[in-house]
Image 1 (tube, rainbow, N blue to C red):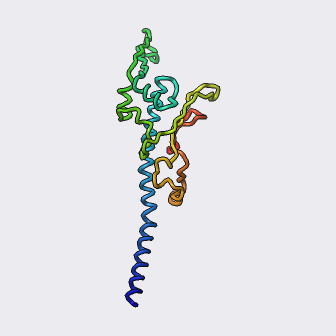
Image 2 (cartoon, one colour):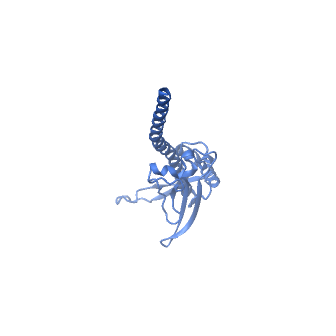
Image 3 (cartoon, rainbow, N blue to C red):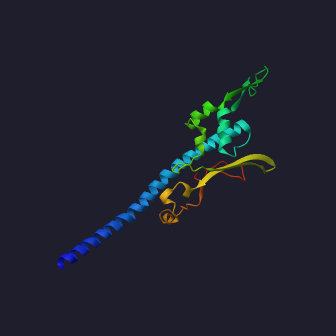
Length: 195
């Protein structure tokens, strides 16, 4: 009888130790994984933002889809205007001339983005082929037409097993349905909501 009681007590103690360990391990694992996944998604969004800025420099607007973005980055040209003479020098008496040169965007953007394939910009890390939502438009803002863009995805897309709302108890600001994004379709703003 005494042996049975001791075995039951050992089982209860083992269960309590496991429950305590699990209650400590889960929030730590969530925080670590959340930070790792968000960092990689943010890094990708920052590359897309840089690519969109280059697209705007080439075309005057933002890309509304990833196919167009990749094609223009691959085949487009940056317009570089060289100013010969110094218009700010009061002693300069010569003529100021402007020389326009076009530089292929592909090579320089591959270096800036550290990638060879612009088509891969669309894919969200930690998903099996999931793609970012992308929208672009031209709006009237303070009596001026300006291009705007918004690119992002809900956190639940890339958080995998941690996309359940119950994990909000470990992080008050965590909502898996909220997007992580940059840009704004209603104002000329390219800031990310993580900044």
